[in-house]
Image (cartoon, rainbow, N blue to C red):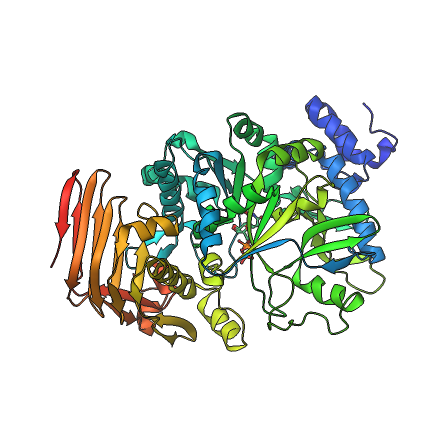
Length: 609
Ligand code: UTP
């Protein structure tokens, strides 16, 4: 028996228990002791006391050792290095000056926009979609998983169904009809319910084999600058989330990235759990990546100065050059220290010169796989300890290493090309992150509310924009506040991806017509066309057509449509039986007589009032 270089006498209990411990775990204990973790074992009870807890503890250590490339020894070594740098207060951008990144501005629809969409649409069968959905969503405070929340409550489509619908539409639109790979990263908090939701809904029409579920694991919490693993009890390791950057490690260790590359997948689009508009941007963003040879394309919006989203900048200096997301709390000091003593302020347009990161990423698979192999997918870990005093010797509470998926370009060399594609905000970025009270406060102080109601609002807004681009006359509507969160009372338009993924497709299927007031239009089906459809509020038209059903809707439709009804305090209370995803927006819609036409058999149909 050997404990490495330490005195056996220090480990009375462990020493007595040693022969009961399996050999692999003995080796792990030795490795940990050699790596400065003897505190984990000094208090070890003699055999016969807490044996079950001890076994669970050793299993937990073995599990985290196996999950992290380089094992616990690697994790401890990385922690020490990063904690030493944090303690010295090293500026991560020392010597670098921010400049404008290479960017393509697609904030308005144009021939250029459509040119990129056409290039992207031709590649639908060469793209996979990666959804990071391991986050807890503490700010939203929703009791289930975020991807089960409805993105709109006219038909109560969940985010997961909405994403699946887009994948199905992409594959139906491609010549090869090849299923679009869908990779979902879950965590122990979100994994079981995500699977439940997929299974209960028959994978929303996708094939089970096209869906890859990767589970991110927690990492050990670190108690001090020496990388001591923290405990939550004598035999319980304290664990914390490692951040969404885990997706890179998992795509590497699972072999999925390499497999997809081998199967001819050329691009992966990374999306967040509750950003409904992500797929509006997919065709054009893919086109931009292809046309401009981008290895990494960050989708962005015009950033308001001071806004709590990262700024995308090209950082230049000391023979180096990176295009990176600079977190908003680092952007102001960086700008003050380099190009602008006023910090994070707007330029002549009123916006920050550094586009706001939507964290929707289009990554070229060939370059990605190369980087993953070189780094084992551990992408730019960082640590953010909260020190208990200025000496920076102790932490207020244990910390851990973290990673962010957008940091991948930190590992790029000269040959990798990074670009930024800027879209209109409503079209590209409307996350559902905040509960009503916080959203109202954020809105009142001039920021975006990023709540369920605004996400739904922008969902309809993007539908209106698509319809307008197709040539219909579309009212803009008027903004009201519901519990302090803005919502537009205007045409509610849902054009499902089966109907149109690109502007050109919309234009081909819509001719003339108008929609005004709080009218509603919902179209689902590849072969639906609209001819001079007239809808004025509150009238509603819903057309759903299966594959092979060719439907022409024409003329005026008049009915009582859907009524917007705000919830009473009772309805919003915890014990009301209204669905939680309705409560978190503060309103619902009542169907007062919408005209609904559904076609479940192939054939030719005309829809008129
Ligand atoms: P958010 O910043 O929204 O974090 O994550 P969150 O943890 O989900 O929510 P809060 O901060 O507790 O309110 C951005 C995206 O990254 C995913 C989330 O699911 C979301 O899609 N994420 C975040 C992970 O997949 N894993 C993580 O460890 C953290």
